[in-house]
Image (cartoon, rainbow, N blue to C red; front, side):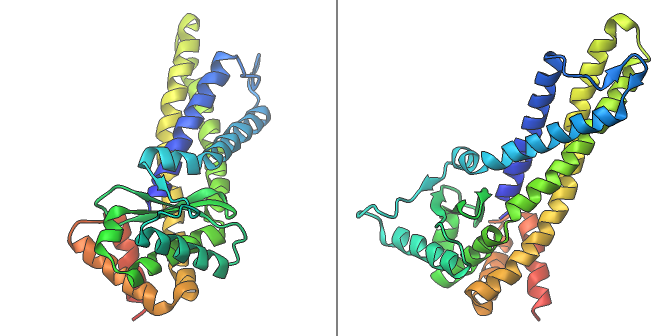
Length: 273
């Protein structure tokens, strides 16, 4: 469930740093004039870079997930599908229709012993729902259905788009602050090395501040996980959701899921009692 967040954040950091480097190499620093920093121009520049980075991360999120996680997309028109593949596609599509999604998500499986699943994509009508082999091997159909309803809730709620907007705001502040601090740092060194100092400090701060900003996005994501559990319970049934979460807790005890997923599972289960 947290795979898509980590992948999105990593992609975003790489995109922001890359754009920053390209902009610097091309001399796109019109926010600096004879009197120093023009903060209005810098803020506009930061917003353009920040939201461009988050939007690019969103647009390539589905393809990146397939590539990084090794997701094998199931072709629903393949007459030679295994029975579990047929059931998985049908279950995802049924839940998607129930959630009011007009274009069915792609369904995929990736090889991992972890009991996990994730949903990603630039919009609810261009999405991917993927499950691990570990989840299919260790959970029965009711538990898997509960997990799938949670992921479809993410898609229906547009959580990736909402997170993109939040990430865009954070990116704006990251770009703004890194360049202000880099400019200040460059004024303390000799003029002949000021440009190099500005560039190096800027890149380092882009990375460090992006990592700090990711904590805010992760906190927001945690909140959206709880909301997806609630929406998934309405979508697929409260009993299935509780059963799925209890199955996840058992997997946690066997160290088959990560600690962040354990925290979300424990919170939701405690709130249903």
